[in-house]
Structures are given as C-alpha cells and as structure tokens.
Image (cartoon, rainbow, N blue to C red):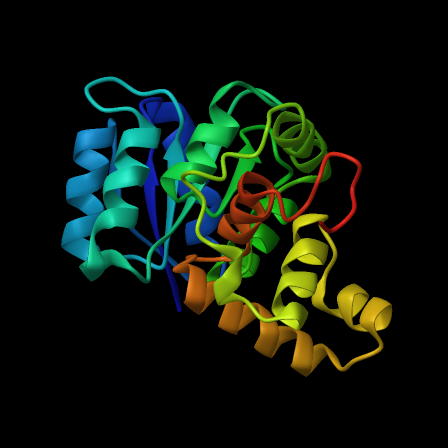
Length: 222
C-alpha cells in the first residue's frame, strides 16, 4: 500500500487528486492540508510514502515545507513530489535542492499521475522530459558551485561515471548498455554514490553532478 499526503491550497485540486487516488487499488490518501505549515504537520503525523506538495501556498511555501521534511531524520522515507501549474518555473531548481524527488504538472493525465506515484515510491526520481531539459539548461547556464558541492574524491571512478550518466537522464538499463555492465551493477553503483553523497534519490544526484562540475555544460564528464 502506497500512502499519500495531499498538500495544496486549492480545495478543488485536492478533491480531484483524492478522488483519483482513492479509486486506485494499492494507494491510500492519509490526509489533506491547505498550506505548507499544515502539510508539514500532516506529514509528521502520518509519515506517508509520498507527499504531493504544491509549490506556491500561503503561510509556508511548498519549497520550505519540503526543505523541513528532507531535514527531518524521522521523515527520511518520505518522498516529496512538487505540484506546479507551469511546465517550468523559477522554483524547480530551488525545490530539487530543498529535497524534492520530482515535479508534476497539475494538468498531468490521470494515468501518468498514478505511474508517477509508483515511480517515486520505488525511490526513483520523477522529472518529466520538459522539466529535465529546462533543469539541465539552468544548471549548465551557471558555473559549478564547487564550494558547496560534496567532494568528488569520495566516489570511485565507476561511481562518478554512473552518476554523470544518471545526471544526463539515462535509466539504469541505458547506463548498463553504455558501460557494458549489468543493470544490477549500475543499481549498486548508484546506491553507493547516493549513500556517500547523502543523496535522497536520483534527483539529488543530478543536483550534485551539475553543482560539482562532474557534468560540464558541453555534456562530457570532467
């Protein structure tokens, strides 16, 4: 059973999401909240698997709520998916740095929403192709923030290569084919890199890869 918390200041939007999720076998909505502060309290009370959180809300923004969720050791198993009305806005980069596992547009097709919840529940990152393209564009447009990024020296050569390929949006299977290794080996390298970098999921690996300069603007590994 995948347990989901809904955090959005629009009652009609929450009702729509709830009706869809309640009708799906294997998903349980544990509660709703109308602002970031209520959402944080809801997540702390129920510790859901997934929190669908609107970006812009009164009292406390979705990004601040996400940051507090990610910083709470007791909520380490909670994955936050940000909800937005726009294909891309200025909040994407900040939200991923805050600890979000991905983004969903509010006009996402119902089937895609359900699939997204399953993907994030497995611990994978969720970024639609349009979001990924713009996100990467944002990263490569700014110089690497090596001062704040974790040190590359903690990763092995293989782990660095896998992290760089994951940052370009490749799946484990695609990375395996590129490196001529098994998908299981790729998964192992990804897991070890995440552990060493204290990354919650693949979305955080993307942030690390670009901020550290591991992946350069020209798309090659340094």
